[in-house]
Image (cartoon, rainbow, N blue to C red; front, side, top):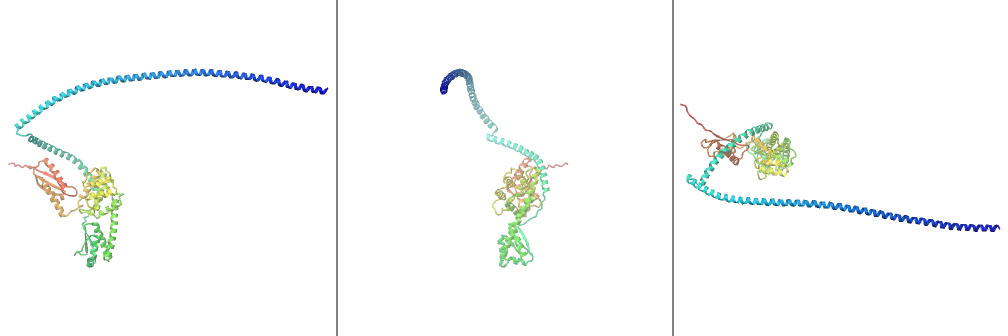
Length: 516
């Protein structure tokens, strides 16, 4: 019974389980179907809402697009209207201008016609005037007895005389005014420069004298069969003059450097006492080296004295060679140093470039260092040397222009020329032989006497002034001015002289009466 009851309980439990499973299945199925239906409805609603929103947006976009197109169309229409109005305005202006041009053309054409008519009238009148002038000229020639060319020559001569007189008076007035101011300033500057730069002058010749300890030394210098003297002359290029002069040998030669080499070598030989060809050659070589050293030292001393540096060593050596070069008896190196000082002082006084003036003054005669070795004037030689060693153009121009070979275009060039003249014109600075001095004076008087109307001529002031007495009945005051200029031009073209020459033309008229 108990087992039956237990078995029934198991069955009941199983039935209940199955029933619960079936009920759960159907409940779950109903719930799932409800959710599915709810989801479908939700999806349908979302799709409908989306369609509605899309339709709304579509309508809004179409509306905005239509409105924008409408605005653009209005802007384009407005722009087209403005352009059309501008074109119409331009067209009206062009039409107006064309009308104005047509009117001007008509006026120009009328004026051209009028001018042509007037030109025709003028041509006719000109022909008539020419005929009248020709008749008048024929009548005048008949009355005066002169041809046209003769009358023209007479008129031109009268005009030339008047103009010549007026020009002479004007020249005289301008020269007097300029001289008053220029002479005053020039005297101040030159006097200052000359006072501040004093120099000693020593006359030099083309011979050197070597003193001997005794006359027996002359025989040793000559040597056996004259071998010693020939060797020395050959090596140095200097002539040895051995005459009756007691205890002295004269060295003669144009080249001062070779003469100095010979002098130094001969003095060394005399001191050494051994005089023979081999020893002479050795001493000449030593003398050359010694003279070269002295040349370099003299050039450096000149640069130091003038305060001029950065010169090329070759130019410094050439400056030292000027120590043995003279011009009219004046030492060229001392002259160059003096010109440098004078040019620098004058440049300082007038506010010019002092460095350029001093440098050009020192180098202005550099060509004289080799003018006996190189063909050409010393100015050209000096310019070539300075160009070769890269000197400044201002210095080269001043050197080139210091003798008037080229036109001066700088104040420094003028100062160098003036300083050169001042240095050369110092009393005792230069000397000439008596013969050349007399010839120069005679040439001065000859040039002055060659002019018509000159009565007497006197060369005075050592040839630095020529006084000319003219005939008062042939030369008037106006002709005096032209005569002085012509004589000065002749002197400049035909004579070579240091400094300047004053041409003084004098006209004197005396009237004498006696009271009785």
